View 1: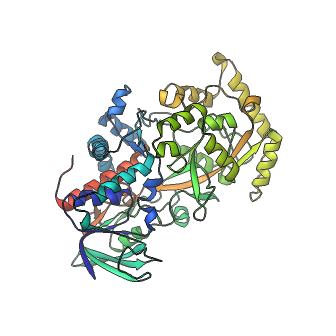
View 2: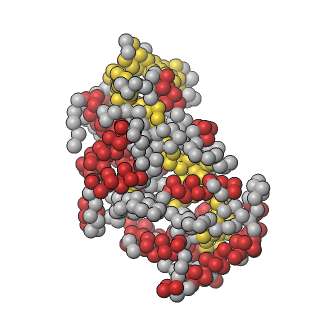
View 3: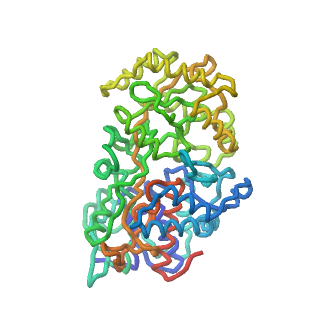
Length: 545
């Protein structure tokens, strides 16, 4: 039996921020991580690094008149909280009020900088989502975000007070006289010589506080299906998280009396494709879908009556595709569209931004991301390339041989021709909702650079044609362990469980569901940072700005 002051179960972004702030007060910490050391930082390391901030200097330089009050109005309109969602609502109020001081200024203080253009996502399908652009991209993606905070951990004057142990799986909590007093678990595989324990052994650690920072349930497709919301889950779901994000500590917390809320609310993505070099079963990537592409169902029919286009409402895209035959979709485009508009969400396939190579990034912005398009066309099994529509259809049906649904070649040809005619129609007579939305997107400078103005699909100078088979991709849990504003885990009667805290995705990014029914994006990383800081402040008795 060991003893320390704080145990943090999970070494993702929320756990790292908690540890960093705790070191400022000299606390002794043991951080336990189920994954190997190269996973340090969790899903945040692989992310794009976008963070929701209202009232930033970048917004002001761009003339964006944002405020915490407007951000809260947008958040509440999107979340649609229920009367019982007291803590999620209070966390939403806290986040929008504190995103500038407790998140933006905090990261700036640690030497983290943001891309000068603020991205505008989740604009809202028919009414405001994000009234203004708020998606602030870390210059260097999520990898830079995590690496910089780890650098600050390693150089901290009290670094000797922190021990990080990998392949340590927490399976239970210790308690005494109504208080959580530590945790126990097992060491899986080779413990990488990072502790004195033998691989495969058990461990028990006593602590004054245990912080659960273990992520959500998105890495377990079984749990994703179990807690699926309305309707039935699609037959194919790709894993956009890690298999270790399986909800184990949600179950452990529930066994200790914690209240778990809203696990049926998830933030999945519509444009998932199989990873060209998968690291685990059903490993998927989330594409940033090209806005000019034609989005069709498994039979080749354009999805409607409202055409699908990204940047407005991610949840609607997922729900709408799940209503279609087979629960998956195709995007039809050409190489010119792909070079200009196609992207993959995350740090792995955005090396110019990740490595902070400004001239390389500007080159891809102006000339297209040839490296990415060539890689996916050559190695991703969901990318189909052809020189004509009949050839494309033949390859689509051959590749999709496991599905009973077949692409109707004549139907797809008619849909493409109709869309191309609309694109080539003189502007004053153009009457297509997708094209109207593209025009709207291009009015903002941040989108104009990445969106073509008027590009038909079948065009000799834009060949070859490309079809992308897209499946629903699991990603983040909007619900989780319910907490108060000090990140104390609440029991089923709403009272704090002494000695137990939860942060990040494990806590639904705050309160067991800070987002309500839908998110405004960028609030996931921001929620990890804010909850980590609040937990450390509650343990140490300090206040944060």
